Amino acid sequence: MDTETKTLSRAGLIILMAGQLLPLIDFSIVNVALASIAESLDASHLQLELMVAAYGVGFAVCLAMGGRLGDNFGRRRLFIMGVWVFGIASLACGLSSSITGLLIARVAQGVGAAMIVPQILATIHVTLTGKRHSFAIGSYGAVGGLAFVLGQVLGGFLVSADVAGLGWRSVFLINIPVCIGILICARIWVPESRSEHPANVDWTGTFVLAAALLCLLIPVALGPEYHWSWPFLTMLLCVIPLLYLLWKVELQKENNGRFPLMPPRLLRLHSIQFGIILAVLMFSSWSGFMFSVALTFQSGLGKSPLESGNAFIMLGLSFFIGSLYSARISDRIGKLNTLFLGCALQMPALLTLAWTFYHFWPNIGVTTLLPTTFFIGVGQAFIVGSFFRIGLSEVSKKDAGASSAMLTTVQQAAFGFGSALLGTILYQTFEMTQSHQTAIATVLIAEFGLMLVLVIAGLFYRRRLHNL
Image (cartoon, rainbow, N blue to C red; front, side):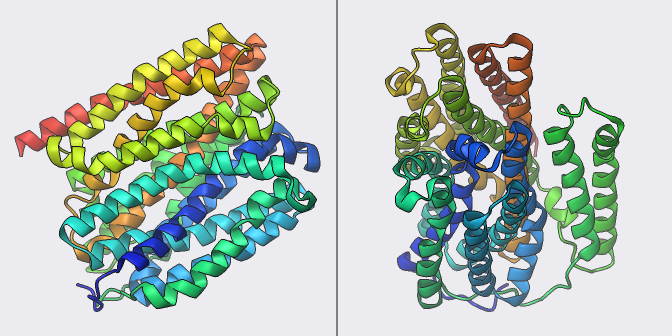
């Protein structure tokens, strides 16, 4: 139980959603600025991949810790501290004069984001019930998905507008006034909440989790560039033993009556298990899709950042429309069927988009992509809306912070993993074929394969539910 039972107002929910927009937009807003950053800071394609992945690493590694600290010291307090860290790091990104400085600032942004995001879902979970809770969860999923698309469009506009001659720097500096507004409003409208039973920080679990994520994300990003030399293969091989060690450490803490960072009892829940699988498959394919298409528009087709961002307008609009109806459809046909409907809309559209890129190259523009991106956007909205509804369906309020942090950790790790994985497929295919259209078509077919695996996993999850 939580000591604070005050209901979250509509104004408070808006402030939390604004806080959610900040870190999630920054995952994608840099995609359309990649060419400008490369030219300005003399960055290689490897460093560009790292810039995207570094944010995801900092975000994912610290998320579970952020959730625990919010439970112990107050979720609103951690939310506000996270906004401060994120704002200062955004300023550092905007003022960076080297790619190394930008990489370090991006990691700091990720740490700030990890302090913000777990507090949002946990606050919703402990301060709202019934239809208001369902609406807030739907809004959380909708804003999260829309932020990814909005980032691409907004980033393209800012870089092309070249406000005050700032160029790509404006995609980071735009965060500053938003952070100030949230800091002013959060203390007024967001209720404080914390757990009645504060738990000690699980430093062992935190370090083992961080090691496992780094051993996964670094080789995926750097391995192909260095021809999979032994250090990267060794790191990759260490992932499974580290995850096993994490399970044993957390299980021992739980059996001793202590408070593990990622409680094994939550991992035993069928909803959490499937939520993790859903997150890995959906969000890795999504981030890889946005990264690869944006880069193809700029490097392959020679489009401006504004044109590259505008390519996602229909996807953003259709995602927003799909999000508005996602909760109603879920109530009518069920959470899992809504997920299947999303896959049924998105998967044929991915194959059609691959065919479009391959056969209409280089005559690819916003209008060419309208039909396929519409169905991809609606499909993604249904899938993303199902993620938290399914993942949290068996979670009690006392585990709100830990469970939301666990799911969001996997989600953000998948974002970083996807851009590195599908970005690598894009580069490697282009190097072999010297064909941009073949490279992007290959990426889209790979994403189709990931969605097919998700459908199969969903069918197994349904069977398990029926057997209970």
